[in-house]
Image (cartoon, rainbow, N blue to C red):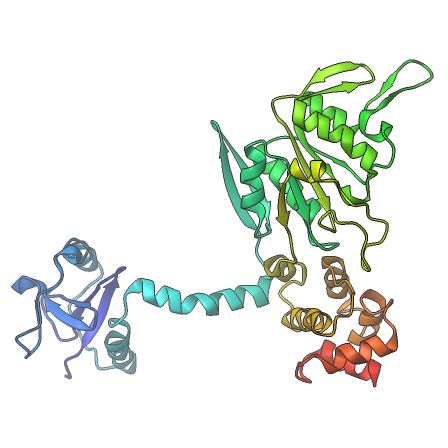
Length: 388
């Protein structure tokens, strides 16, 4: 019977093997492609005299695995099967790699399988605040931790980025991580939408800002660059002083009051993409730590359900926009709609309804010429047919 080694147990750094013809439990250790004999102080089983014994730091792991492997070993009856020959080949190949190296090599394959089968899996983030642990589930933006740290330190944050890049969701997740309520207001063009007012019956009509300021919570002022400058002066005073004069009287800010503002510009005023935007004065901008938020690929992978064709098309489309200087927004919303319609309409119809509806033919032709995707991409091929 041919003598070869079989694998008994594999650890993080070492592998336990034994000769296929062994009648007694006399195991060997493989590490780094070298075979060692535990019965001889872990000396290398080799004709070369200059090979050192097994690294002493690996001996405890080796001894532990040897003891565990004995539970699985039984003396051989007959082991001259194809399966055993394959096992021998595995010994020669796998034993040369540490277990962590195998895991690293397999990780991309596992990730691709999960993405294709289940789409992007949600994350689970635990955030310890004082003695309490808050859990955030879902896909988070790459800037999540940065914004969380700033808000936790009571530093007002200004998020700037293109439309539909997930600023609102990011703010909700920050509030969830901090264990506080989330309050929201869109562009404020009238003072009372921020301060509240006393109605004709003498009742105070409170606002989202009032609740956050007095009861604690994260207040998000979206489209701050579309809010009137006069209103922002009021907000500046509340941030700087820690108290605010509401129609019902002066109120000190709650200890858990936090604020995030968001806009599509850097506060420099209207541009060709975002009209109707005000220029923010230096005093307003000075109150905030400015964080630029862009489209996140991992968020888009989750929205697209791992549809590589769709993602490759969207990323190539955006790259063509940047290259040609054409101003056009391809947001998460467009990806989400295209994903939902992929099994209902053909790719060309879906593109026309969800993405291309406001582009003229000349711009589409320019974009198409600057996209480099194979005909196997169904969206790229449909786009080419639309502009042909």
